[in-house]
Image 1 (cartoon, one colour):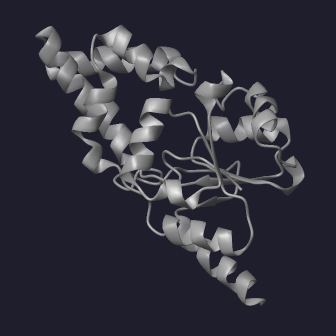
Image 2: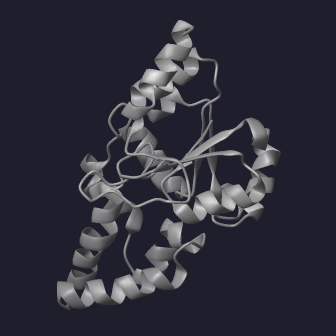
Length: 216
């Protein structure tokens, strides 16, 4: 099992609120401009590098914006939360003998914060950070590099992610079993997904796992 973190196992509300509300507010205060002006400037800068490793890099944004991004994340870390039924899902995977591997684009500093604030760390067999491999998951070359640290058979692996660009990258590499998350942010509407099998949340997967464990 290859599992994404933000938007998949964790509620994307923290990240959306951070980049769309908290950072613009702190940037506006630092620059002496309006919140609206700060948000317009930042959204344009986000779009310019979205999908690259720099987009996910705390140190990049700290340099670019003149803000301590890691510290700003800690200011609102109470918003970090696991999606409903994720703990049950991961526990059932363990009982089923499945290897649970977190594969994330999150920067190492953010990863440490989120593992500290949640129960994820105790429910994973391995954690792979894209920054350690030098490519984001959106790049098809990422998956070859992943094989060097976590050997897996693409034909016998399920990968779950909320990012459609990442899922397309995984499909291009040859991962046979892909699952999308329709509602990565619990405070926003569901994504419309046509290209991949999709679920709104992990509660939809629990009955099948329980039947499998019961031998039905």
